[in-house]
Image (cartoon, rainbow, N blue to C red; front, top):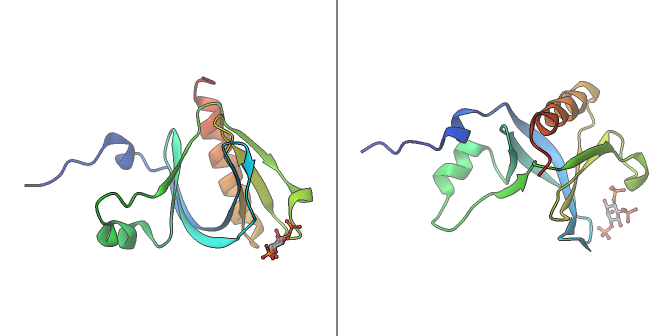
Length: 126
Ligand code: I3P
């Protein structure tokens, strides 16, 4: 029998590869470690996968979930001073998780910045 996907999975707004570094978890600083991530934006969250979503879903074992970022009340800002790389912005969640996202390609990072900012601005703040 077919599994009906949750509504949010039908409302993917944008997806693609970016460089990602999680730099804080619950307010606690983490050692910066950049890696390539498949990023999936839907209306109220971002999911980070190690491979493309299709690969991730087919590889996914029970209990093996992508990292999910709640965008309600989150902040997004350019973060020039947080990296030697160009085109870096930061997302900070209400729970104190901090992520840097980066692409060397200007229009790609600009598209992502505006898509995520629009998603955050459409959501209630709490
Ligand atoms: C970090 C690594 C990161 C770098 C970071 C270094 O070293 O080189 O790529 O961030 O710089 O500390 P390590 O692998 O030994 O942890 P950027 O690429 O964003 O500059 P930082 O400490 O100035 O953030």
